[in-house]
Image 1: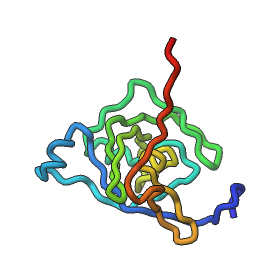
Image 2: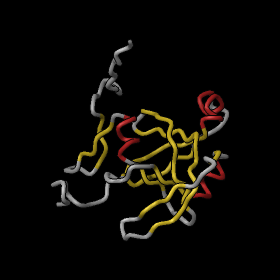
Image 3: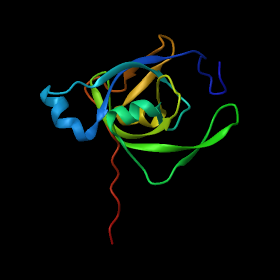
Image 4: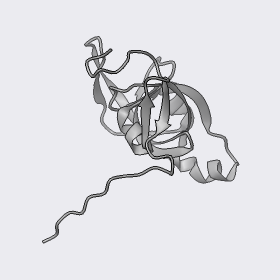
Length: 145
């Protein structure tokens, strides 16, 4: 168990990814998204993709790099790719992603899971919909005046 009482172990999921600028071509079937198994990082706070994949997808980068701190305490400045579309279990979300050099796979973070309205089923080591009828989002009204 980890410090939150969750079982320790890997959870993976099939993800389809593409550049949002190619969205109409993807939806029309003129282009195919990249499909791969990704690691679900329940403690991660940003999607991480290989820098090479970000380049192949033609993702733009934010003008400033982000300081990334790894679990082993190392830190480094990495670029942030924008305009990434993720699809998992038929649910999609647009997100930013750390573009990490020499990375071998995709890491799906907790924020993307919330955007996709997916939960980690630790007992079966898989992702499951929070609401099987479709993604839900809490919306709050702000007082104006």
